[in-house]
Length: 479
Image (cartoon, rainbow, N blue to C red; front, top):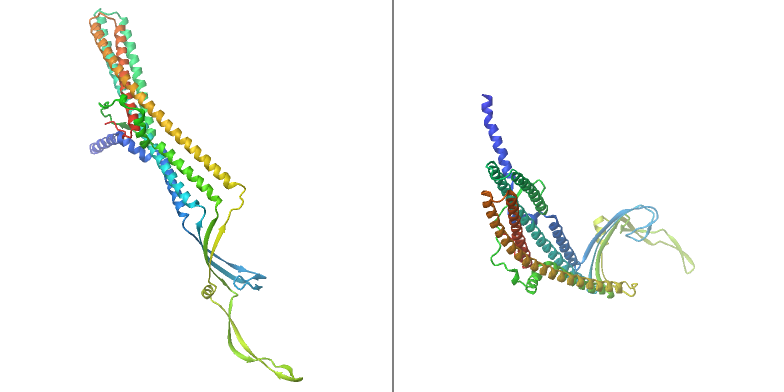
């Protein structure tokens, strides 16, 4: 009874186990792969971090226009013969003191350093954004290449498995013909050798498929043991695809707007030009305006008040040679410590000032900085020209590769059709015993090679078209 009552729970556990396995395996489309890479790829995250750094640099450059405000507070106790910071008199009594202050300053003129620094930071930000966009575009193309490579390898694996099944059928047919006395026993060994080669090819293709998935997982920042499977959409060559109609000038003009690597180089050239103005600001004087508020407290600072009058001690003076005793009234003074708040109020002071720093001789630093900035502009201009030339070369290569891939696909289709016909004819003749198994194996190998070449040519042409779409700014998609 106990076993029967426990048995349903065992079935439930088994069902849950298989359900979890089915959930673990996920089928991803190309669009999902691209989105996941945008959210998780480390290279892209580094590019985005560079953009955020450039944003902070621009904010800092703009903030330099604002005044600087700082506060200060100090306190302590002085011993021995010291100067009271409040009365500025020598004192030998231990004195507690406290000072408060607020200082503010703003730059009025510094040769345009702040304005040109803001402009330079803006160009640097645009360059960082262009780099991040280019990184994303390149990553998307790499993922599409890995995705197409998996589709190609899976199709090759299916063909390899079909060839194994065909070889097994041929082996069975050959054995029947040998038993009937139509073919010699040696033909069986030829077919068995072909079957072994087909199985070996399938193992190699399976290994290539696993490596292809590993490459895709690396782009997606997935763990190697993540059970990933991709969708297999119907991959069709666009009917209107004709790379022969594309020319370098038209594609290049479009690519200049879509390939941000050239834009990034142009932005860096503009940033370098601002660097010249920044360096030249060292020739000009700088003018600063400032203000301050201050107050202080001392435990020895006292207030003195007259509380009355008394007769002074008598003194003898001579008036006309006659001694006369007189006394003078004296004020009665009482000293009291001034409270902290009242001292702060009484000692409160304000000030405003303007300063000018005029460069006279700086050991040639400013002149050398200007020369370095000009060399920086020259370097940025060369890098821009290099980026433009590299883009032209890449586009010309992409057009040439697409044209060659199209011709290769057409040739592979013709070869495949011819080899299919030749194999069908040899297979019919083998069935009636007019050709031996070696001829059949040779014809089948030629057909298999032609089939594989056709599959490779189709995917190669499709990928070459995707590269052209990449330069034309079209979204990367297979549907």
